[in-house]
Image 1 (cartoon, helix red, strand yellow):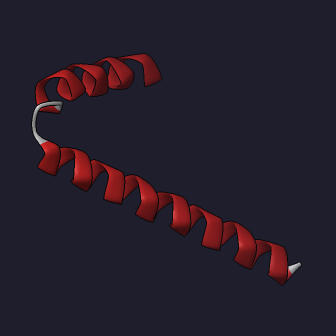
Image 2 (cartoon, rainbow, N blue to C red):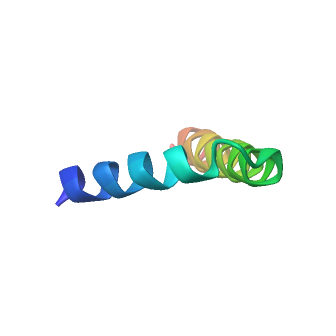
Length: 48
């Protein structure tokens, strides 16, 4: 299930590589999701 998604992301990445706006949006999404996961991990650690 993961491999087709990676292939799709790779194919889309080749098409969107020349558009800097989409790269900024993807980078922003990655940063937001990473910070959300980190906050969730820290809150779980504090609850114990």
